[in-house]
Picture 1 (cartoon, rainbow, N blue to C red):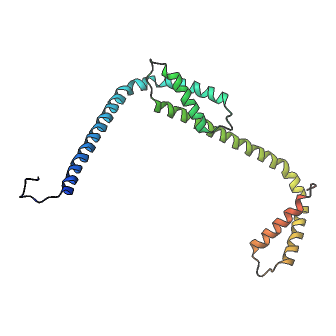
Picture 2: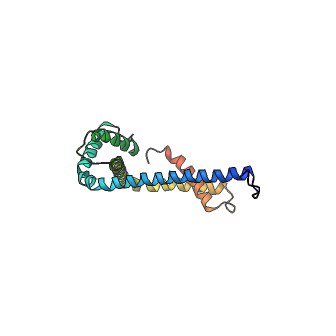
Picture 3: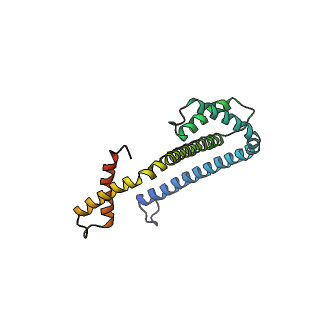
Length: 197
């Protein structure tokens, strides 16, 4: 360009043009490289898919056996589903790495371990809730006859508390909610010391 007196230009504009070309070229090269790698991975996955599908029951059996050993070892109440999944995955991968006769992927093993761990923890929680509900129901059923028998005495205590509340508060300015809450709170204080009721 220095010998071209017929052209107006600056060093900055030339620098910018060269940079645009170079960085665009390198970015395009990287894009093409990534596309080629993705196509290679896709081809490998497509080729491996039928064999992985055929071997899936055996792989699932290995992951399941690993899962059973994990839950037999850890404190299942204190251990989260994530911890159980990760332990199952890590140990299953160790067991599978030596099995050249099986086709599998780390992602599928992770998914299997996760399904087992989270389903197990969800079922444990369901059983826990059912046990708690059954316990509450039993306690309520056992308490119901005595509560019915003691109800007149309890009603008398609540009524006396209610009368003391309305004698104390400004009944015109106080809402029903306020009066109810004051009566409840004070009646509960009075009842907590009554082991006979």
